[in-house]
Amino acid sequence: MACKEAVGAYTGPMSRIFWVGVGAAGGIVVYRKGTQAITGVRERSLRENLTKVARTASNVAASARYLAALSSDEDQGNVVDIRKAPTAARG
Image 1 (cartoon, rainbow, N blue to C red):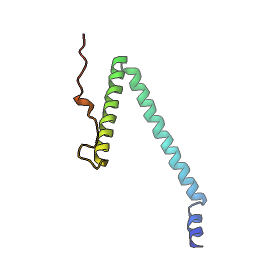
Image 2: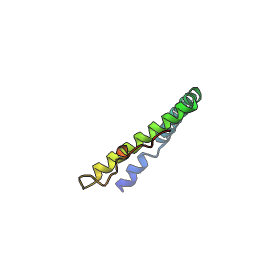
Image 3: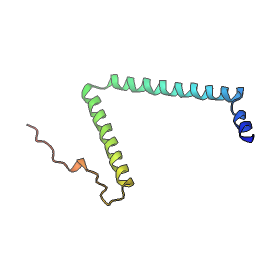
Image 4: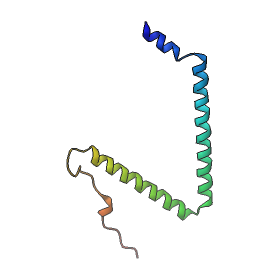
């Protein structure tokens, strides 16, 4: 019976108003961040945008490798370090 009373305490009108406010604030933050991102994309050239995308993807891959190595029980963790791969010659 105590559980039903505790759950009921969080479903009142004040709680709903609070969560509507949290949702509205979150929506405003997402909208502003999206607007900033779009403005930044428009101001940069295609090459700069592609460079930024590549750098971000590289950082995500490095983070994934790091997390895989942390969660592995083995010393090397069967994680392939792509930074050690030979690069193709440009010509």
